[in-house]
Length: 172
Image (spheres, rainbow, N blue to C red):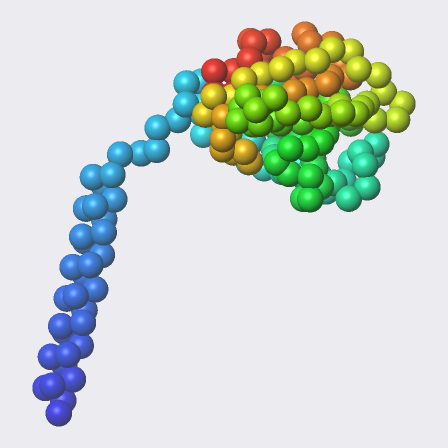
């Protein structure tokens, strides 16, 4: 019986070692995930680290949905409002935008959306940016338009979250 236990134990150890060695070999053969142009692991981490739970000045019930997005800031929304919006941006202690996202399909069908992109109380819209996202992005993976009503000048928000170029990053 002792011999049988040792034999089974040895077989199990050999199987575990083989499986471990095989998975390491497979992992080494798998190329690392390719980052979009201009994206780095540090930027990805910053974008995936949510903002504080509920900053002052944002509507009740919003929660962080993204980290610090270069040229935009932190994003907040109510779960029931996703993916269309409204989303609210926050950076350096203040609200900075209201956003909606309209899918390319909805837009092509000729939909209408009334009474959207209202500024938060105490803020005024400085300008509106409309960005086509042909491949979507985390949070809304279909082709769509990001429509931001900004409360701050364009040159200011384009430098948010370490975006020193002041241009829209290629990965957005």
